[in-house]
Length: 349
Image (cartoon, one colour):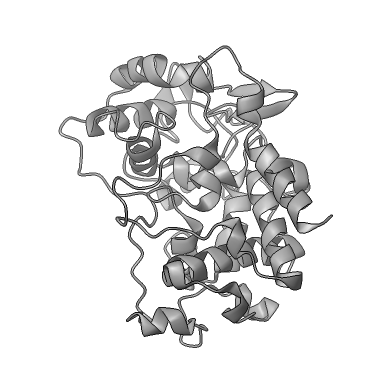
């Protein structure tokens, strides 16, 4: 497959929503989401005209395609109906939606989740385990290398801006590529350094912006009403998502085919941050902060696949891994959440 064909494949997969209207006028192509409130407020990721030549360019394309069509291209690693792009919007380029260009430059980093320093590769493996309810690819798997190549290219282009010349970009070894960009030997491009860039890279728009603690306790009843009014049209009345030709065009938010109880998006605060800045699709901050907290709480009362860290004791899992507003292990509608969880990926060790 040549470069143009590969790019068009990825773009067509990401843009299927435009080709197949599904009982709603709210469909949107994630590649066309607005970027930034004002010009220059956030870094601008490179366009496809800045694709490097040769094998590394092919890796970038493959990484992009894995990112937007994860469940179809990496079924052995995915146990739900999601793609990476569902949480990292605009193909991992959109600010305030955990963009890849910022994430890559934030690792290696300590993660409380597993109590150790994680490389960028390990961070991706965690996404497969929890958000994709899957089986993480092993160290140095080509899928991980290609996904890292895509993030590395976005990061270099975002830092360098209009001066970005992919021909002058250093091509790391696979081992170095998988580490991430937050390291002493990261090969910054000269154009970035000439413009005053430093090793302490500024990444506005990184992750999901935190919200203040809600003025009122997050409320399930209010959240259910917000969901019915603002979310159900895309994600379904029962959180089941929407499919076209057996492919999800809007992801499920609970049930057997979504992220598990160990995923970051299961945390009420994380979901609230994401929702406020990114939902409804293409309408950031339409919901108030309180509404975002409320609907995130409602989502957390719905059963989903089991936390893969659960070794048989719900109480121990709750105590060790769940806190804050998490509803895991609490009773809702006559059932204790986590006791009737859906299965994890069948290939999970």
